[in-house]
Length: 232
Ligand code: DC
Image (cartoon, rainbow, N blue to C red; front, top):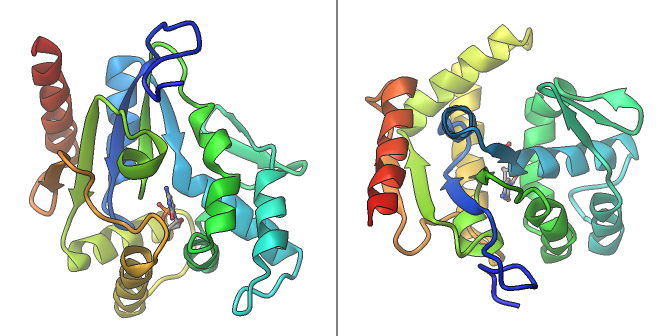
């Protein structure tokens, strides 16, 4: 079956893929674009964070990871996304998965091909009419290679560290900019240099640097790019 058609030949719902490094604002932008279009939204990073949280709670070692065990744990998840909250294993884990330690663990397990493979179906099942805006690292390169529009959203490491700092403080976590900047650079290096689905712009992606753009401006650039595509 072609990646762009359903079994009976009907076209699959359109996808806008927004990839980029940690704290580039892709979650915020993807949600805004989805709201403006009335489309569904997939936060693929949340799936890696959920798998990481499950692994941490199970006390599994991540420095010497057992890929098969972690993949089974990731593939067996049944998270429920509802009203902006995420529930898993009977718990509201919306805030827990945003902790830095969980993000770091997510970046580690995301380097394991078996874990990535275990999460493919869960991500592709999010593609529902009238359309999907998906954010992550490999939405345009691996998960939805037929996406109508691919965006690679970036911003300077300093401004990303500052944004992450504000997010964490707002959520009641303690944070330190210098530590965040160091961790963010380490995570960028890990996400970009891994052999499996490394973070890089998809071919034909619109590379968008949001360092000096507001959320509204960045959202509009993406919507305009999609509008131009539709006009052909
Ligand atoms: O976007 P985020 O910070 O919530 O993602 C957490 C980690 O998950 C990130 O460091 C890399 C990984 N990830 C990935 O490898 N592929 C994705 N599509 C999304 C996230």
